Image 1 (cartoon, rainbow, N blue to C red):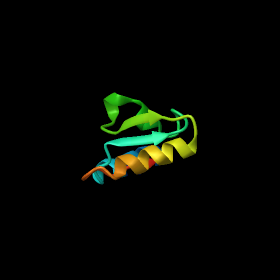
Image 2 (spheres, rainbow, N blue to C red):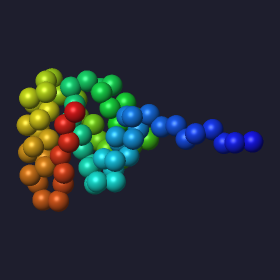
Image 3 (tube, rainbow, N blue to C red):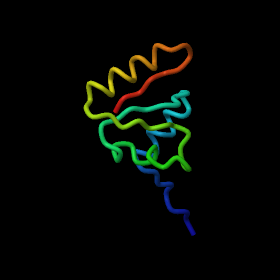
Image 4 (cartoon, helix red, strand yellow):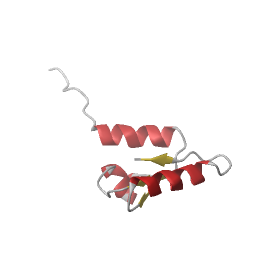
Length: 74
């Protein structure tokens, strides 16, 4: 019997890649934008919800300028 194909959601793949690349903190406008990040038990990426995209981008930029810490905004 053939095994079913391995399935993974796009959000889970994104979070996995963020973790592989050392991202510890992500900024977004809606809590559900990166669903796997919104569950602390399943993700090492800390999610900060912002009021708008500009705020998220500025926070990610400032965090990314800190030594050895990439920033990410969604």
